Image (cartoon, rainbow, N blue to C red; front, side, top):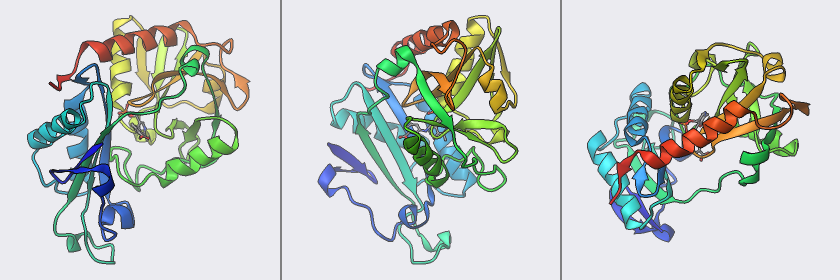
Length: 289
Ligand code: PXG
């Protein structure tokens, strides 16, 4: 595996970051998780846009232009001879001194990993995923905006631990007021009658790229699509529920806190969206070769 370390290609074993890097010391940085399918990178421009917006929000100056970063991502996938890949693009505040002052970090640092990803086992796409509601609340947007896809994932990791301890693979996180926000690294949707509902991002959810794609597909299918706050009870009585994310794609949720959603099987809207989303990922994207 060849890693892009600040524009230089090095083997995985030599791809190391300074212990003085503020990405490591303070989680000061931003990232994107991107996928390619059959030789094309899905929604690359959208991911780059979000990366640069996240960076701007924390006044992090990415040392290369968006166009250059795009070229570097494509080159990294080519160096690894991949067609289907999972790409992690990370930008940190860079090395500084042992104080959190970011002005002591002269230059931001980036690296790109092009690898593969282990999805949920295929069976969960067919039979659906049981999840729990975490007691760990989602960070409040007034503290760190969910717009910023930062290197601070401790909040989400604590919820993921609850999922692990509960014997499931994913957890739903509520915001401070008790409204449903999102999963630990995925957005959440419910279906009620002919309406598809997802929490607005101000609740404390990332503006997911898969979320946007699924909303577009649902509109094309003739569904009413709404962004509005909902509670755990709305989830328990929903006809269907599913999560979305770059890594996960669209995954049916069939059980929440041991309560069956709908009839406990993936519903027709979810099934259609899984198929439509898969078709979309195979039909568009930036050519790698
Ligand atoms: N919410 C959070 C908190 C996320 O981190 C999503 C929602 C879904 O967004 P996208 O744009 O992917 O539809 C994310 C995405 C990983 C990994 O390695 C995490 C994400 C994406 C890909 C991989 O854990 N986060």
